[in-house]
Length: 391
Image 1 (tube, helix red, strand yellow):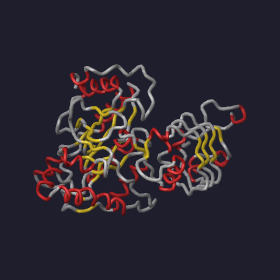
Image 2: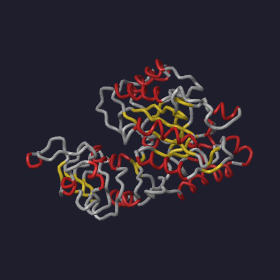
Image 3: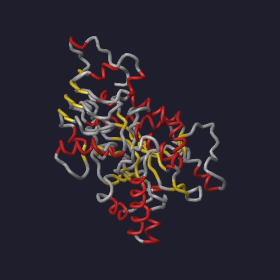
Image 4: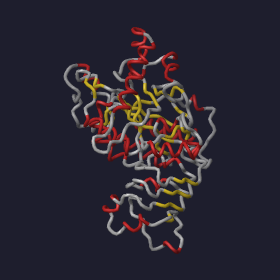
């Protein structure tokens, strides 16, 4: 990795701008039958839009009679998505792309493994919130196995980026299209913390990004035989990373002032949970179809979103230069993403549900106020207002 980096210049002196040139880490966890430990040990550790990661899902459990996901598992995946994480594509049946294609043909592999999971995702929704999966932007090759033909079948028709394993310097630039390498953290490889810290430091200097792959998120003391009986289940149980190691990486990245990205963000693509919000954004940037690029949203300084039927603000975090925002007369009850907009000065939140204000006494009138100033430099006429922590 060091040899591959010999020609890189030191980027640490440039002004770091997220999604544009600020280096970061992209955690990527495979195999969605592990969703229970993702949720149990990852949800609180990663937080709400704090450490964003990518969870790569299948349509079936390959070690449990090849059953499809039950509703409880679907709900957990969608709740992880609602916390800012990406739900990406890992093949419906987790079949190795080259082996399956050699046996049945490339078209059959695309039909069975790629299109089947996309169609399955479109049909699912959360049992309570009714939120749905976003259209996947990134793909992960099962078992890290691929060739040029399988890659060509996926990009750009179905995805923007496809993640594998080690390749050259193991780094990914911003706005990347095509194959993206990664380094696997699992016990199966016995990753060394000392070298991981050196790699993170090197990544910061290059101005690129590092994708770190894992499977299960499990404490070291948890029994590894979690996925059934037999040698195969036992072996798959070794594909695990401890929360302790993940937290060490998070702390090291923070020390070097690095961001945390999803794989789709490394590809420069913005996504939205709420179709009404996405529709309004497309109208604003005059792009009725196709991928929405994050750099396009960085040019927007004003957004008029009143009376758009919006209930979820996911995707708002990409408008880093937004100064004025009108969200009045919608169905929004969670405004925490407003914190992610460093240049926002004026926002109108009038006539939205006040469910979140119940958690913070005395702030219902705050949310009702028209064109509340949310800049860090509070002007005199709103000095008396204290922003609750959920905004």
